[in-house]
Amino acid sequence: MTTRTIHFLFSALVGTLSLSVDLRGDVAEVVAKARAYVGPDNSLNAVKSLHFTGRVVDAREGLKPVESSLDYIIMKPYRMRLTQISELQVGNSTEISTEIVILNNYDGSHHVKTGNFFWRATFLHENVIQRLRASIWQSLSFYRGIELVGGSVEYLGTANVDEVSYQKLAFRHEGGTIFYDYFDQDTGCCIFCETSDGEVLHFEGEIMTDGIRFPKKITMTIKEDGGKKHTITQDFERITVNETFSDDLFSVTPSSSSVAGHTSSEPAPVSK
Image (cartoon, rainbow, N blue to C red):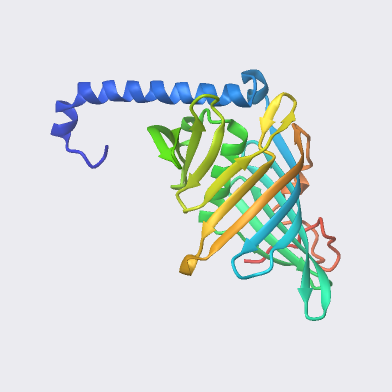
């Protein structure tokens, strides 16, 4: 809109308004079907937090896959705590590695501990925080209300992928992150998603919790430099709706000053 001239806007005003109404109608139709597939409106609107537990397999082309346990909490409006614990080969020994990512609105931190070494911790960069906020909204809002948080949704028509036709929506978030969701035209199920960062997420299987349908498995594919393939597969064993959590879990800068005293579930104080 901002790239058009005033003259063009006025001369095409009627056509533009008609197009906008049509697009919003298509958005509303696709969103309504997608939400109906996931669960009843009253159940979706009541979701304040989600807690995922399971396993993650991180596989880079040419390297041995790394398997981790997964504990992932998200809460409205923009809170997250992700904990992954894995076994790493360090020389001739196997060490336990713990990685924790915390987000609390516009603040975030990343904490790593391997074996008996001290925690290493850093603040998250602004662009990482924006992507995490967008991801949390996608998971907790079930396709509705992005305009209320400074974003927009656009109907992009039908898209043919591998000889299958999908309804396609673009969710444009504050900060520039975009999720392109592809929905089954008959059921409204979101089959896969592309991001503005070039990632592709495929959703498989099903877990029903409190009448809400969640994917059992999410596989994210990333194209790295040189065309090498990188996949991260999250396989959920349990999903809990509306648990309550202590504010301390989302503290970006924990009060304790003793790094050595932290356990695998307690991240170290953050340094810039």
